[in-house]
Amino acid sequence: LNLKNRYVVKTNTGTSALHIALRAANIGTGDEVITPSFNYVADHQAIKMTGADVVMCDIKDDNLGIDYEKAEKLITDKTKAIIPLHFAGIPCNQKEIFEMAEKYHLRVIEDAMHAFGTTIDNKKIGSYGDITCFSFDSIKTMTSIDGGCLILNSKEEFEQLEQMRLLGMHREE
Ligand SMILES: *Cc1c(COP(=O)(O)O)cnc(C)c1O
Figure 1 (cartoon, rainbow, N blue to C red):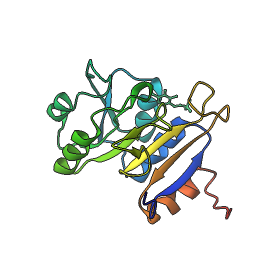
Figure 2: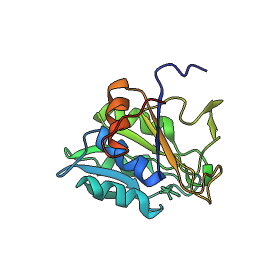
Figure 3: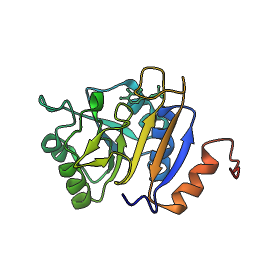
Figure 4: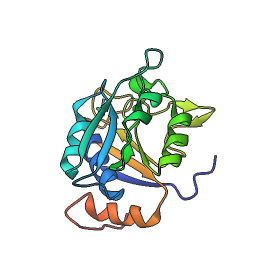
């Protein structure tokens, strides 16, 4: 497992992890973000907090994850990111989503709130990809009562988020 160049930013909730992940991806007013309609309210709230518009996409019956074929039809020139959700820890069609994102230059912010410990092709969710968000809320697989984190690849984005996550302060740990 190669965890080189994966950076962890800790947050107070999973919702804030999603919010600052979107901010790191430079998403704001005028942009569109695709997210599954079968969801918790946090994805919607995090997108709206950046000023961007929420684009709901239907899900697949077999894995309860976003229907990537329908998602492709929702892409416009305003689409900047997609938030696939691994509902109840069940892997969604991650590979197809990564391929689609590459084709259309979208950021992929994974909602892995239910998926701490989930593996896809023997690789743990969060150990690869673009940005992966976790929640440690009391009903999740691992809890700190309230808490969250996100994992990303870019040192630059990591340093930016270390400040953004708490009052613009950076604290060495
Ligand atoms: C729990 C959850 C979140 C965010 O959780 P917080 O309560 O803010 O930690 C986001 N998305 C989904 C699908 C969730 O279930």
